[in-house]
Length: 314
Image 1 (cartoon, rainbow, N blue to C red):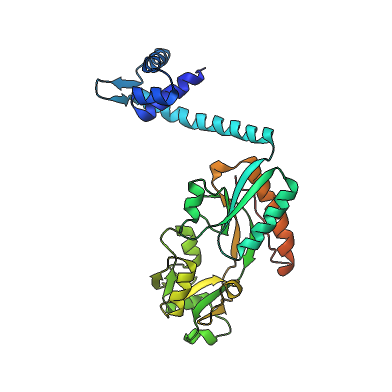
Image 2: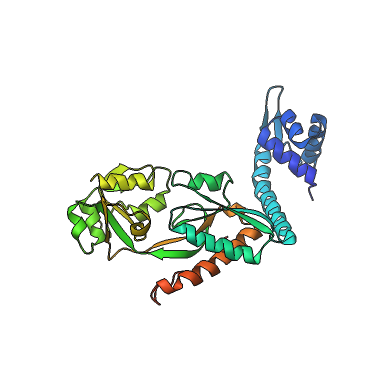
């Protein structure tokens, strides 16, 4: 069995490729780094690094060992972290965020239910925008986010909220007086686009390249925020499929909302970094599913539950 110091020293040197920086990171001497690597090479029966006076490089044997060891070490660290979380119980702080005005009340209900169950864990609530929602999860400033599906590259819980889709058009647009529309109408008008930072999956769901029958959808201008996108709509620069709650949370005299009768509903739920799946986060997802699902279930027909069948994707 490899000793912990051997593993840490080898993987750190494989990353740094410099004995001095490796020693500084591990808080040991460069002589100790050299001693550990030489002992490991004797055990392996071959060189792990090629050393010159100017450079340090992995040998093919060293590269293979590094590639094999790194995921094993990461798995052990994750297992230890999960055990530590379980041993401590649900304490500390959880940073939760919402994206879009309609999701805020649902998130607050989740926070209240979680607080009842875990009074020793503080929940900090904040709002994020389209421009920084993903970055907030990636940099760790937010642990969990209530946002629209799909949210590419993230773990997700069950869908908590569901709403129909409507088409936002300028108040004086020819479509503004229609009672309802088909998604196929997108092929006939430029569609305002979401910011570049939003994921490919999300944009394909909201502003697809083609209609269900395969007709190409013309692309309109890009908006930097949701309010800016609605302003582009009001200016007649394009149309925009949105959730029906936009009528309530984004009412504007210069924008009309027309139902899309054949569009799939928009679903929203909690998303987070898979590597950040702590016990407190699991418990928050469970609390949200219980609190938000029970509150919204009366607003939907029996065949369209507010909480869709799903799993805790961890």
